[in-house]
Amino acid sequence: MLEGIIVKGIGGFYYVKTEEGIFECRARGVFRDKNITPLVGDRVAIRINKEDNTGYVEKIFERSSQLIRPPVANVSQAVIVMSIKNPSINYWLLDRFLVMAEHEGLKICIIINKLDLASEDEIREVEDIYAKTQYPLIKTSILNDKGIDELRDILKNNITVFAGPSGVGKSSLLNKLHPDFRLKTGNVSKKANRGNHTTRHVELLYTGMDNTYVLDTPGFSSLNLDFIEKETELGSYFKEIDKYKDKCRFTGCLHFMEPDCEVKRQVEKGNISARRYNNYLQFLEEIRNLRRY
Image 1: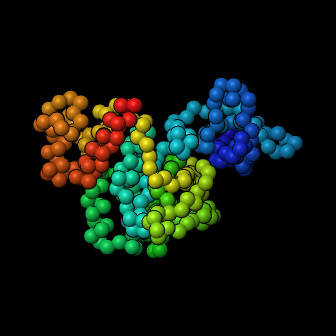
Image 2: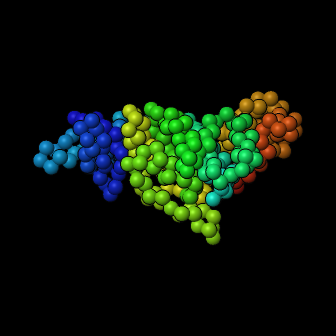
Image 3: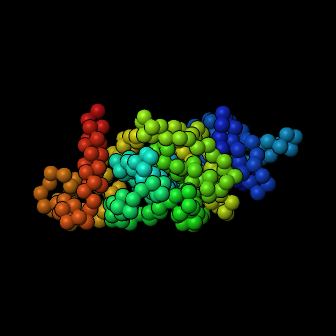
């Protein structure tokens, strides 16, 4: 049997990249009987039918991770892309993507794209907010190739999901990384100041570097936080909040109305971004409302 990775799945057919090329495969019925669905990103063993050069997925190796949206396995890293202008950066949405990636235990990198459209002050504001999170932050522009080499380096030896709302330039960045991708790009709607969806299905794209794949995903305008089971869990997904939680007076402090809260003190001192903290409070209220139903 050949081993490979599922790079695309459409209508019950799975396209498996191996050392001998890409084979169109079906999954054996035993997976359906066990209620197991092969996912893009799965590392699999396939048996080839010599008559028509198609195959069957015989084995799915153990997954290191599994995302629900998009449905993909073995992702190790999330690159969250926001444009600084056209459309303007959405901090609320960026923080939701960060929470989701933290929940999945992924390595995280923030991309601030369309740098050529912004002033130095606007760029510095973003840097000041997210420097405290210690996430790598790469500033990019496809017009002058700024940040492209940094981005290429951070992708090595990872399956990376590119996430972010429509119109921020995810597909354009990927095309810059590897022109053979030829991903469709879309214009930003002037009326709504957001992009049109250009990515329609889940597909792993091989970068040409060993063990290095990227995943372009359909843009999102919102993300539900119903995967968070407990209110106290949320703070652990904000790195700078989690850093100070053990100095709060109360174990399980939600950093909201509680007295003698170290997190609130650090917000006042400027060591935690007030914008990030306000987003945390909004998310906390949302989780509380979800738990009521």
